[in-house]
Length: 437
Image 1: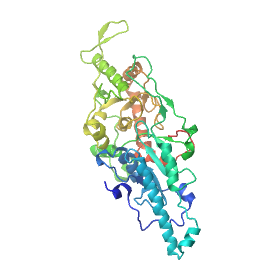
Image 2 (image 1 turned 45 degrees about the horizontal axis):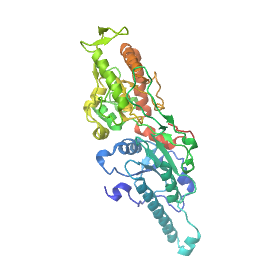
Image 3 (image 1 turned 30 degrees about the vertical axis):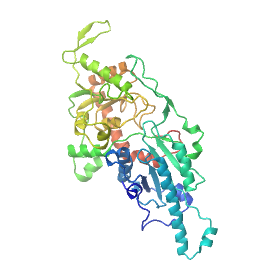
Image 4 (image 1 turned 180 degrees about the horizontal axis):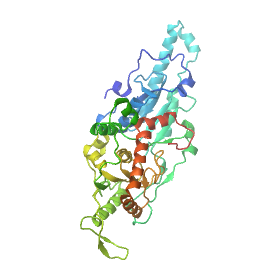
């Protein structure tokens, strides 16, 4: 991608006057609609746009409270920065260049009023700083949040913090492995990072917020086209389109766990252990399966379970950047989707994908569930292999409970975790709360 593609333009005919723009406006504009400049403007590799596309660009496009600008000199714009797709040193240089260009723009405006260079210099012109948000979807966290925040302050010539950070990294010492046995709770899950007392917090505005994945809009668009309708009653009433209800649809598959044992032994030992247990359970409850009772004797299963225990469709980069029909079809035809975290970090795309497609979702523990989701109300948390097995059988035997939880989880995902919901909570949220979400 060209420099102009990555960083946008530096000219705009409708830009507010920088000469009259105050520091307070640049730092804390409380208007209902905010302008947003995204850095980089495009992904260097369009086939790996990932979170930049799904949760930044899409969020701004669909939000009623945000509007994108491609003019990096616009003083009303806050900046969103994706550290995965643009090196942080380059981001600092872009801010330095923008500060320089804004200063020159102010000086030119003053020249246009008839002031000479000496008079302009006497005024000691400073460029108003602006809000800069780090949107960190790195698995292990962006390591240079505080160093970048300090350098952005210096690049803007600001005396006050201007950088806010939202990050997936909010625990240390998480290190799961293959579960030791069926009854031992999963551990270690890690300890919460005390960002509120971090020695370099002075370089940040507020306390870092928890960043979670949301529901991808391309998934919702795909399903609305596939089922010829809309998920939103207001849209159905306004347009006459059919209201889609995925919850009561026929779901012939009992359990879907979209990971095959041994597919990621570097970061997925814990996940492999869960997959292996489900494979054993699948055998026990197969057409001619047998299972071992508490007395040690094997008996033929009275019930049969249908499971899919492998990824469907393409995963990794292709799966994160385009909708996989086989995967969506599996999600929407499954009663219970079991999700599991990686060994060293938590949260992933599949939790919200499963909720959005209307199954009952079961997840292993997270340090904090995504906002508004509650165990036993809108999803189900399992803490050990035996608990997973017990709860799977329970909810497969209790359709009313399963469907009620699935419905509530689906509603929360679709009404509180679309791309713009998460970004609006970050931009308009309370930055005084430690690790707010």
